[in-house]
Length: 193
Image (cartoon, rainbow, N blue to C red):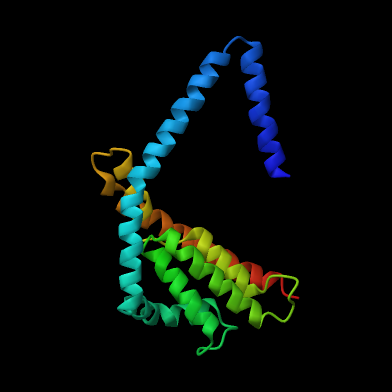
């Protein structure tokens, strides 16, 4: 439904621009935007390859597992209904660790794996379990210490100081993650079945 809405908005804008005699400007904007998109994609290929490789090295060297062990006590509080030795907790910890490292592209497959593991534990297969909702809230708030993807975008866009956002990113994501955890606990308390 939302796709239809966006298509209607785009076509309405194009039709109105041609009616107003600005069709040539729309054509120029479309080609300019396409050119800029391709240039940014090419500039991002290197940093994304670098950080994906770093993520692979981190996984192979068990650095992600080390980070997961460090944050495990906190996650036992956040996910109380998951057994300590369960595969789901390990998948969640790896996903959150990747998000903390700012590796959104690498964190996505780990998040999908975590959701699959949580679905195995879910007694009601047709609806999300509380642990699944918690994981979604944590992924959405996404505590990030090193925003590598955003830094890559800033480098590709020609930023003079692409790393200047690190402190503000840490502050913003800490606040968003704390808020997500608080609201998750409130919803778990008041909306029990």
